[in-house]
Amino acid sequence: MHETYLQDMNSKYVYPNVFMSIDDTNKVSQYDTDIKKYAEQKKADWILHGGIEKEWDSYLKKMEQYGLSNYLSIKQKYFDQYQESLSEEK
Image (tube, rainbow, N blue to C red):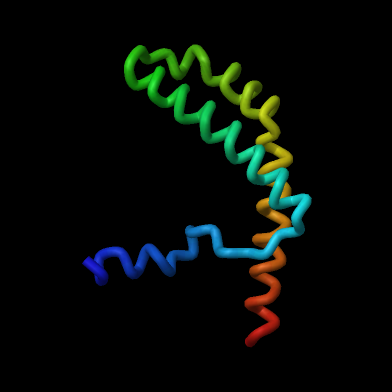
């Protein structure tokens, strides 16, 4: 089992552990809670009842209301810093 999951644990597609400011940590935590809750609700609804094509645009608008762009901006900032620190180590 170790070998099966090991390559994914070190995948370039896994968001790395990063240190964020307290303010950004609090913002990300709140955004994460709201965004994931809504996404899971809609996923279940679409699996059970369909309608993803009809509701997609309103889903994206709602995600924006929950702060998706702000959430992604914060995450991107720290990801960029992380990538920069890797290049400095070489």
